[in-house]
Image (cartoon, rainbow, N blue to C red):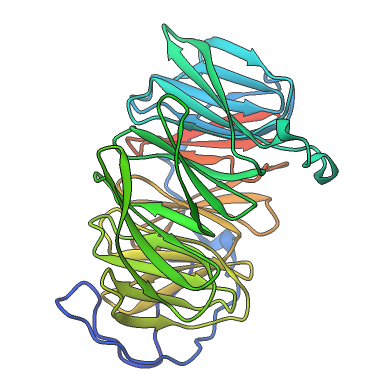
Length: 376
């Protein structure tokens, strides 16, 4: 049984994934209330594989699997902790003088970037809280490399797909690019960014409503295209092949574009800013988050499913979608057909602490001072 029925869009839209789709206006659609989860038959093969109870010494903020899934790194308040991938052995830990907000592995698994957070916004003036710490992982041990000063509290960080540079987005709405020597190679005004998979390109959106496409040309950053969306951009996503771009604004509207700036379709507004946009790896689905709702759009069938939530993650293979409820009391995992695979109750979720493994067989969830890993 499916938790949410598919809802057809109010007016016909030409499929996005068929050549040269056309744009047609849409009317707002009504989002259904939550259904009773007690009627759902869950997939028992997706089960809890292991749990690390209270062994981290503080609340867990983020979790990341290494690219080869041999290890798991956890941001635990003031500690960065490395575990064996099956949870059987702690490999190393690094005590930090400042709280760590979230972590990111480089594509080759040799480097970890960790963004420092601030315990109180009153302290944000201190540059210590505006840094990203870089560690190298060698022989299952941390080696401190350098500290990068962004200049504002970092809200998002990501390595480029080729691992040649690190992007940090700060509360100052500046995107900064850093090479592997810690040198700032460019600064771009942006409210959000997304890399094109397996390429040297990325897209940015800014407060003026402009989308810009960028490319790394050896050691220089150059623009390879831009267009105006007509409204300040609060979220941006790009399909894996880089041919289609989704933008969200502070009215809750999601618009799909070609990379040349041709508007394809507008997904209905709900009156609140779009905070997250992400395509599935095959480009068939797009998730948008705004106003406490996660919406999963099937772009070719022109259908949508919705659930209350304020954070969602696609598995790398695009087969599973994990959604954190808006009250942060459970994480639900869904398959492509819209059927519930598992509902995971949690007591104290820290924002950001739900991640799939690179092979899509595992899901790490932070629950207070516990790490729980689920999978097939």
